[in-house]
Structure formats: structure tokens, C-alpha cells
Image (cartoon, rainbow over all chains, first blue to last red):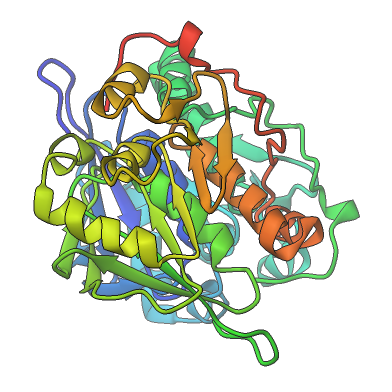
Length: 210
Length: 210
């Protein structure tokens, strides 16, 4: 919704077949509540996109991002093939370059890393998929212990639920801590506010999964 | 997905225009991971259904539930009108009667209460909408302090995020605490495991919202 006085902030939620539901829908819940936020549900080619959890969402094809936009990239099983899709990665690289902020959740950071734009920056991912993600692009400074990371315009989170904590951290950075608390309270969400506190760190995680 | 050895458990996720995204998608994330779970995305009349957060999901019309099924009812702004829709409430009453378990999240309990089937049982809701929900059907034993409640075949949760904690509690009850922990860990979710611990209790909640 674009508020009366607040300028619109366009947020592009990037869907692809086999994204993990909560990776996307957790952040969506909080981002939508921010004054001025205007959410767009988009995919590379448009049309119906199916989550790993089996429902289909209607999407618009993503051409260009408006100036000052936010790009949200979920993870999920679909990343395993998408990370090798050169057409997709080429388009993603352009979108990431156009974004003012770029947020990835879980294995969404493997897609983001495939653009090369994370090289030399700190990032994290689902700790159960840590070795796979790190293996896709070693030049990223992969953090084995982090609920989420923030480096330049990039925010990356640990697995699935961690995307909600990261999103509230992002909202706090761009709109103030009070706004983040408003969104958490509206949803009766117990925000894990410390990005360095990671009970699921890579050193204690079991075998990888998507 | 129906597992090889586990019998299928059919879970009907009931969508309606103006449901709150995380009310539905949080539980969906965990329920889908339970061995044997088979999720159906349904609505009263079928077709594309739009969440409060602005995306459309394709749904099947819900006729009858299969025996032994679970019915999941989210809340959201759409409940404010739907609670007065006699055709919908009549259909919902039939679906609830057919379900083996029935879970509501947030103001979804107002819809569930409208069937009369919660009368005399404990239930809860979003604490910011507590007075409105209670006013729709006083014979329910509304709990002003509860992260979630369990009474007979009914599980009801507090606002939005509480649905995830409730769902893990439900999974623990039907599939064992180990299965609930597996799902929480898979999603790197910090489960608030005590249903009576409610930091957002009605006595401290601000003015109501949907």
C-alpha cells in the first residue's frame, strides 16, 4: 500500500518453482505492513509459480526494477537447478544491480552469490545446506554462525524462519526500531533481534538439505 | 506428500479473500513436512483467492472433507465480513463437523465460533482483536492469555505468528514431540513451546485491529 505522505517503496518478491513457502511469506507479512510499502509478486517469465508446499501464486514477469526498490529472494529446493540456469542468473544479476536493497532468505543466498555480486562480502544461509551453498561460490565470506548478515545493500538470512528476524532487522535499519517493533507486535511475533545469535550454527548442523 | 508407509493425512487449507498471509503460510510450512501430509488449497467457491498482502493463490472449491482430515482456518481482515455470510458459515459448519481436527489461527477463531461448534470450549485469538472476536460469540470460553488452546478436536491460536507455535504443538500431539522438533529444526525455527506463555495477552494489548 502506498501511504498518503510516505513515498512508495516498491518491493519485488521473486518467485520461482520450488521456492520454500515461509522463506517468502514470512518477510512478506512484515514488509507489507511498513508504511509506503508496495509489494509486487514477480518471476522471471511470469505466470503461475508453484511453491515446494504445492500452491500456485499468480506472478508478473519482472522486467526492470523501479529506482529505490527492494528485491526479496527466497530459497528452497528450486535453487538447486536455478543456480545453474544462465538465463535466470543473468536476469537476476541485472535486478540485483538495479535494487537499492537486496534480501535473500535461506538458500536464496546461493542464487544471489551466483551473480558474483556477493563476492568478498559476508553472507549466510540455511545451516543444513551450508556446505552446498558455500561450494557454489567460495569467494563469498560465508558465515557459519549468523542468524542473518548485513553487508552494504545486502541482507542474507539463515534457514526459512530466520528470514522473519532478518526482515525485522532490515525494517529497523530503514524505518527505525519502533517500526520494526510495531510490525512484530502486530503479528504477535517474538523477534530474535540479535543477528549474531544463531542456535543452528553450521558447526552443529546435521547433513545438508535444500 | 504421501509417504510410502505412512497413510495420507489430508489437510485442507481454507483460503478466503482478505486472509492474513502468515496465518496460513506459517502452519503450511510445518504441516507439509509431516510424513504422510497431503495439503489441499481450497475455498468456498474455488478460483483465485487474494491475501491481505496482495497475491493470488489458485484454489479448488471445497465440497466434502475426506475422513480423518485436518481443516486449517486462517484469520485476517476478511473475517470481518465473512463472519456474517450465512452461506459460508453453513458450509464451514459442515466442513468443521467432517474434520477430525480443526485448527484456527488469529481471527480465524471468529469464523470457527460462528459455527456454534466452539460453544462452551476454550479458544483464543489475536489479542489486538480480542474484544471484537469475543463479541461475535460470547458462549465460547475465550482465553485472554494463551499462545494457543487445545480443546477436543479444536486448536486455536493467538495472532498471526502464534499459529506456527500452535501447529508445532499440534504436530507434537498427533505425531510425537520428536516430529515437531524435526520440523522446527528443519526451518531453524525457535519454537515457543509453552501454550500458556503469552507475552501479548489481552490485558496488555492495545486497541483492536483485524
